[in-house]
Length: 497
Image (tube, rainbow, N blue to C red; front, top):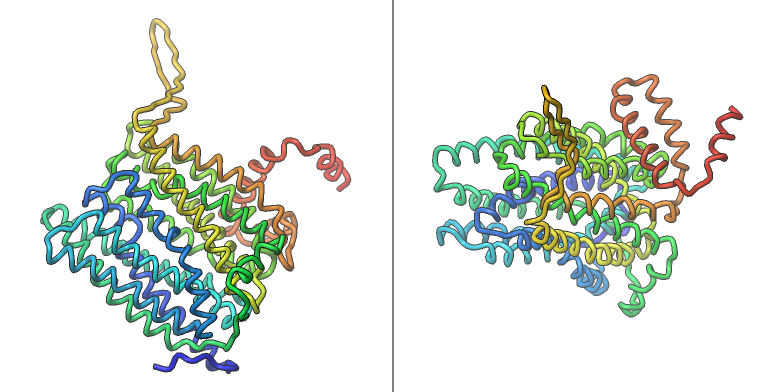
């Protein structure tokens, strides 16, 4: 298998590469579907994991990102990003199969065993990820980055939806008919994921790599270079604050639904599918707008909506009626899917865009390592906070008493998880204030993008339902955040129209 870079890529090479990267993405999505998300949390709880251990599992992918320095060293030495990516991706999938085999052969396993092997899974994934990002930046033309990765995400998320339905039905069948084999079922998932993951690495090896050369300067000299770039440093500050805030709350949504609400796993999978469908339906829109205008504008529009979704989690479970809670959860997952599609796509693209082509791997390495530290701290802090608030409650009620009628209405009911979600939402709101300081090449003002969106609304009612809500939520939140700004400027501009 030849993995040498090429001096120039032909049109045929590029087409083949784009196709193989999508196939590898599909294989990766199978791995994630079988071993991540709600399934991983359910398996960890089945093995007896506590809140701190759940937080550690969520933090592992970020903790291991620190080892991306090794990727820089390997690229410097061998000047072959494809070989590093392919080999490390294959090595990352093998521990998954080992987890499944251990559970099958030793009739159980432990949470410590799961954490141990997942560390190596995420370690090799982190080493491969940096060289993969640099490779993709050079292989895929910049003008089609947004459209291509949004299309790739649509394919992978569609596959995830189909797989999640099948796996949820299978797990429900096993849990109801053969509960003793529930852990065995998870083990089989891990073995299949490991095998398909290795196949995906082979498919990725068929994608070409354009030749690039990394500077031979001292490693720490290279790593200091992005930090001297003021604009890139601002991006690091915003990204770090944002991921820290989100990771305090988001890893515990599934735990809350499983333990706090007692929902069946199939319900949680269905809610996840709803979120993914909402994401799939809006990915093309986000990709088109990020290519035409700016990633910053997309983040500024979609991030406030996601913060509202986190706040809404605090109201889930206030009342005991299941259909009310499920209705609220459906709305939360719909708008979470819409907003995260724009946020994730734009954060990835803006990092690629602000990294100079000749030093992309160094810039991306620093970005991933710095944000990894704060991403890892988030769920660990969240786990500690969840234990701290475990025996604490805050209730605010409205009571009406009369001779003929008595009524008590809960306005706020905070407990272990609600406290956690509100803290995460507040910190995310603070982090969003750092975004305007980042300058993006070819940046279009957010207000301009909004006007263009509104123009599209008039001719496309389908977009109106989605984007109109985004703009409304954003305007309301930005008005709160900018109270200290002078209002007469806005009113005078409006009266002059």
